Amino acid sequence: MPVIYLHEPRKGQNNAYNLGLTAATGDVILFTDDDIRFPANWIEAMATPILNGEADAVGGGVHIAPHLERPWMQQIHRTMQAETTFLDPLNPEYLVAANLAIRRKVFDTIPAFDPELGPGALGYGGEYLLLKQMRLAGFRLTTRFHIAVEHHFDESRLLRKNWLDVAKRQGKTGGYIAHHWEHKEIPLIRLHAVARSIRLSLWKLSHPAALRRKDGCDARELELLRSASFYANLLKERRRPRRYTTPKALQVPVT
Image 1 (cartoon, rainbow, N blue to C red):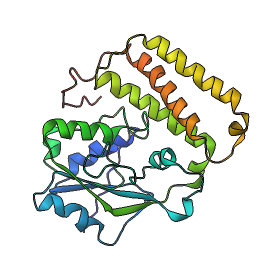
Image 2: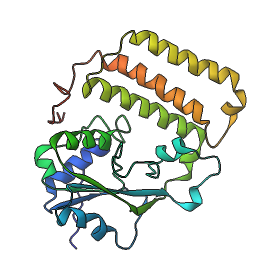
Image 3: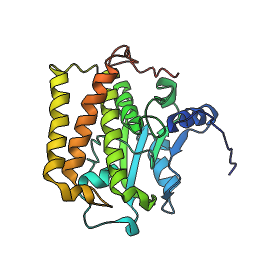
């Protein structure tokens, strides 16, 4: 199997994806990450539904590696580490690029990933927006969550400071998508932003022990931080022109 290495000097995973798409020639494009371990039949199992005409995209499963499991993990912790256990196989809320296959022709309609999303930029949301675009364009999605890869992330990602960073970035990503893609208008948005910030501050004052944890993070704090970050960044993004002229714009503006 020939291997081609491409260097993308610009920061951001989505810029790297877009460079890869310009060089890809196969009928099926498989996406994954550098901290993933695969089942033996991964390529065939993920590509077959596309090659046999069943689907245009296949979302596979992602499980946390056993040695990284912790007894305090709740649903929010697992989803923040890209686990797919809680997704509806018939109507998944998002895709995970650590285990994803897409028909090449999809990128004739959706020409690029948004470079402001994903790792190296806002941090998240690239696959989430892509799923919305594919559904809007009428492409067919299926899931193969039983074809699961193991996520062997660095143990530093279990530290409290990392959980807080992830929650903040996820909130900022949500604010970006809400403004630029969804064109969301929220009445009294500044009041909402202030209220979320106050709730987070009050929670911290009433849970001092939770702030001293080294690993893990309280699920409620993550939820509050993500919400506060969402409104704060939505306020910021409102000062920018929308990158998508209508919520139904498929064209990704690459800058």
